Image (cartoon, rainbow, N blue to C red; front, top):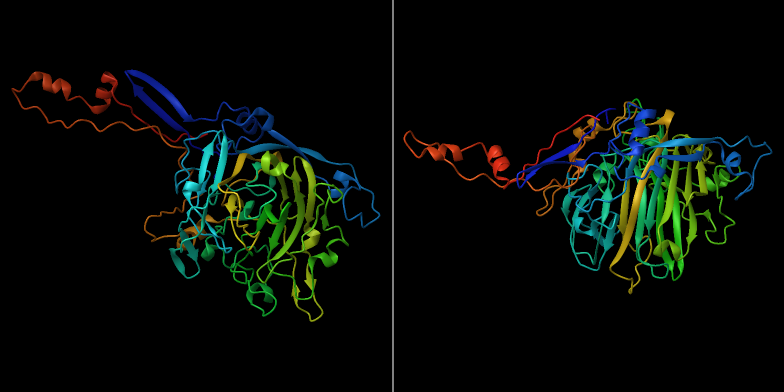
Amino acid sequence: MSPGRGSTLLAVCLVAGLVCARAAYNNTGNTCVQQLRSQSPSTNSIWIDKDTPSSACTKTRCRSDYYSCLGESGWPKRWDTLESGPAQNKDMVLVFSDEFDDPNRDFAPGKDYKWQALDLLYVNNDQAVFLNKGVSISDGKLVLTATNEKNKAPMSTPGGDFLSGEMPYTSGAVQGWNKFCFTGGYMEVSVKMPGDNQKGGFWPSVFTLGNLGRAGYMRSTDGVWPHSYNTCDAIATQKFINWSNNTQRINRCNNTQGRGAPEIDLFEVGVWHEGDAELSTSLPIAPLIPNGLNWLDEGFADGAMQFATHDSPDLRSRPNPYQGDFLADYVSGVHNLNASYFNSFQRFGLDWQPGEHIRWYINDVLIQEINKKALVARTNLINESVAERFIPLEPSYVNIFLAMSNTFAPIAPDVPLPATMEVDYIRIWQQQDQINIGCSPPDFPTQDYINENRNMYLASGIPGFTDFVGDSSVIGPIGKPPPGPPPPPATSTPESGSNPGAAGRAVPSFGLWLLSGLGALALWRLQAL
């Protein structure tokens, strides 16, 4: 997004002769907008929800290393003998928020400027199709609803687009692809999980993905997910039996810069056994480390991963035993969840410092860190090697999904349906000197590539369904517009000598509505912010 561009939807309504101007979306009076403008005048402030409370305008986070921020708490214990420096706390300024207070928003393709509700059968052996009808706003919350309604949905596969077979469940998902992206910062989402901690079947998740890949659209993600690599070598360009089957499409060998669509999972939640609910916090990464090696081999020896709440009797944070597959390594942790996560809202935070570290928080408590030491170059005993991979550097967007798949957490026969995943808000802050928003920034452009490969990002040709590929430099519609005016009555030009009163009635339609007060005019205009 070019700095300084914005849009305001201005509705001018004329009802019963009364002219009333209503700003359907005008956030200029919001305290957080004013604060962002004062600190960073060139930053586009349109992404801040007008209903964001003033208490959310800033967020303070420790920007030092793990031990300087937390001391000796957590596990593993400190691996070196160096003394920690003082904690460096920095205030971060709000750059994006969605409070979900407007029930009239339409998340159909191309209708909302922040999100699109997917019509899609996802790729992970999902048993629930995502449909627009599974997404709503109620009581100031974004609501994703899973039901046992059987349905079909589009699939976007390497071989083309087609309508899926009938699946046993229907659910909802929203995606911010090529609308709002950010590079680094702190994201917080207030969520109440679906179902309970007793019955398995739901797969709620919030995750970011680099804008070069559209989650669920396999032609777009093939060869870019979840690459974060900038070396021209064999693992970037070749497939290896029993090692890696995921070559990097845009690599340093065929481009001046290796590119990809890396993923960061704020959370994925599943119930594997009755009363055994777990939350995973992950960095899927490609290319893979060589055979015979594991990121855990050196990960704890050099301080590459920390579990601050390892000793918590509730969370018991620890390494995830799942290490990945032939497409990606999973640098991941797991954390226990009790019933409170399913019957009340909890705040989940992601602190992303590109090239440096990722930290996960729950209710402002740090639970886990992964840093760049986990991604150093590695070579095995037969000289297979991978160079340094990076804590993601790509502009990334947010996905909020409520999936159901036996691949992740087995679906119990008596899974409680319907069930809802509710999101109270999502907010993103960045340091004043590190503000970086937009889906196609100069150092990591994406829009030209998307334009040249549009068919990879679209499920098309399926009767009854539409899809949308926008331009990240253009802010789309905001909410549902107010009802438009009725069509004017048919009129004819009066002939000479006809009733003189007819000419008086044949006034321009705008004047007719204004004078009679029987119509409404909706006028939309773009206004730079």
